Length: 363
Image (cartoon, rainbow, N blue to C red):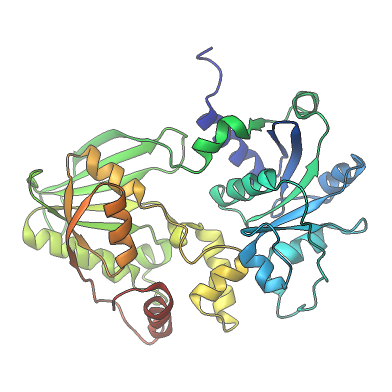
């Protein structure tokens, strides 16, 4: 029935449930599990999960496992056995690196090496998409469908969801209107909304760019602290303003404002990374300790927006060659990379040096 949620909509429901602290049910073939996000786990729900009588595991990424010196037998993740006497504080200490330096002797963590890990892998993917710490308590369930119905929990079948879980939700333009800007009075703002009801993304079009020619374009990821507050810890705000000015001076072009805060980990996790940087870790090390990759952004979103607006080639304003490569792979021809060498100051000099040395940015 059309009234029933699609797989895309079901995944969105599960993300929302995990953010609120609710459990969700994942199943694949005969295997099923109750999943609870470590970040929003309560003592009451942990107690109820233990009462089910099955062994609990805590799924973490291999990046976080490396920090804890735990064996990631599954390659990209580790399944840590949760001791019978473990409480929420124990799980939080494993999942959240904020107290690592104050309490460095965690574990030893015993990790599983046998059996499938697909349910754990999907649980981590959902936590990441929900902008939570990538850590989840996983409890095997004998009969997933019945357990979900009995406890009124949302269920996701991975056999159906796998192709969708790893892809971005299709975007559709919702509206557009004229928007005079300081850099150009010939501005127009387009709003794009994903089918899964997630965060909207924006395209700032200046002038009337010729769709048959490479357009001067910038893919800018949202940065609340830099773009709005003028943070000196990054170069995002200066890059945003410089890109708009350059497009305005040329008279036509497009700036995409993608809601992928903190390189795709969300503002809360970005602030956790900042806290780790205050402890002496660089930006890449901080992301890894949290359990994330260097960069979790999906620039296919930008390619999809540009394509829907009629553009097939760009002159890209960026210092990031990986962004160029991802655009090319997504079907947008990058005919030129235009650098944005702005925003360096005494507060972000080390940050920029790390981006150059570890992330390949051309600064």
